[in-house]
Image (cartoon, rainbow, N blue to C red):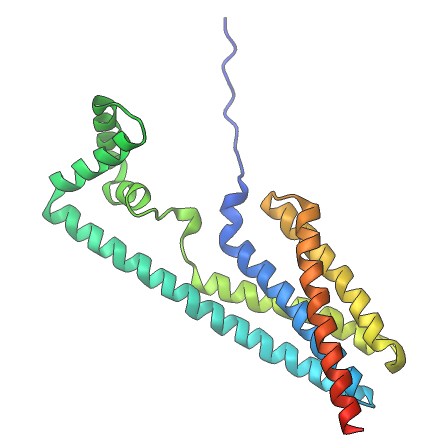
Length: 235
């Protein structure tokens, strides 16, 4: 007697795209922008108080900006999806035959025979007409749906965590070694973030590490140079 295959549950990285993109962006921006701000101010300032004040202000302002920006941008995507779904729902009600033929044509274009395309379209519409047309005609898939609140919270939360790392290093380090210490620690944090983001998304870890560390190093180098020039000119 043949062995019956046991059902198994699959978890795909694509299901994490909605929050993973916002989380990685928030944490990366938190580390890079706050570390760059701290390093730039440290290169120009004489006391540690100004450095810490700039870092805290950058954390608060950045977290609020990330939340607002992410919410607005993702809300625009959600509004577009809603408008397309409303229009599609109206078209399905007014001209169901034409919409059915359009769905059949999509499946035929993918390589199905006329008969099989008709059967597939009928079966999928039977399970949910709007859902079938949203997925195959509009390209709106549940895993990619816009979720503004989720994206805003993920960005603000991870930005705050990311920004808190170089800020904590700045609080622990003496002023003389602060620029170099914060730079090296932030590069290590960025490398860890790149590795975690790549792992969560199923991407090559080395590529993720190199990508975030390289651009983070460039940002910190530029702001340190600007801070040094500004401090020299003031002196």
